[in-house]
Length: 343
Image (cartoon, rainbow, N blue to C red; front, side, top):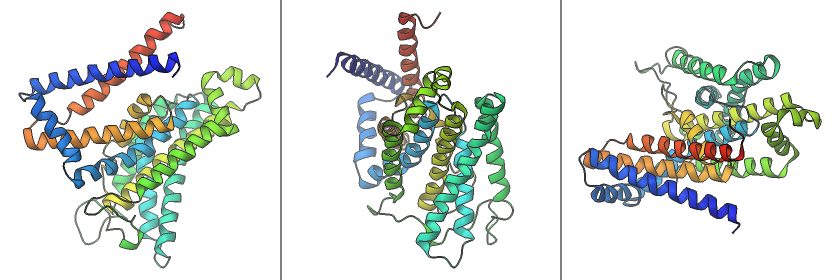
């Protein structure tokens, strides 16, 4: 192992140790015994097959949205809009699944996934085009588009998509032939996890083995140098944004077809925002996104178990994730100051 990798591993171990100590302190402040809480935490994950399976159910949308953010961040396009792109993908896929009667189930699933990718990608394209052509901040645009997407979905489930047999703002059930197959019963694990794993490989291959991936990296490092080398900066930003939004849109599709089996408000559970933290933890690497998403999902499942059994707030997980991100960002800032990159 090289010295740089050893140093990075040591830093990650140190951050992990500090996070564990912080978790213990938060548990004590909640009035509980840290050892009993840790036993309940791991029992929630590994104590039964349902808890173990739930880790992968929760990790699936996080992997896809995290991959989307990582692709965009590689080009310096700070996509904060994965949440809105998730919603648009969910909306589009639900429409296709519900309004394509007469087609075989597998074809309707494929069309739903493509619709999710397309609508999520187009939603991200709006911000990318405004940045590439007019220089408008993508951070502001993508945040505003998040709220617009939520409102569009809210209108849809209250009007043309609302279940005529009910009074709750949600669509009717997706036909069983159009839902993603569940396995590892009686858990909720579905075929969407394999879609997420395939996306990890494809994004890794794109970023590490293709010319487009190389151009993304160059644009992200130095746009001026990229332009001087003949790379189209605008094209790279737009392409990465579309891929980013498309992956978030697929996450929305997978959640509709694999978990909820219908369209409803708040369907993302904040996956699009959590994806930003996961991408930062993973340093934009696809495999790192996979690992970070599974770890975050495991933390959430374990924390929910502690909350049910001991009354310890599950929000501790979000606090810890934010704390770890601050540690990482602080390390990066100190490293840049030592190199003279920050004044």
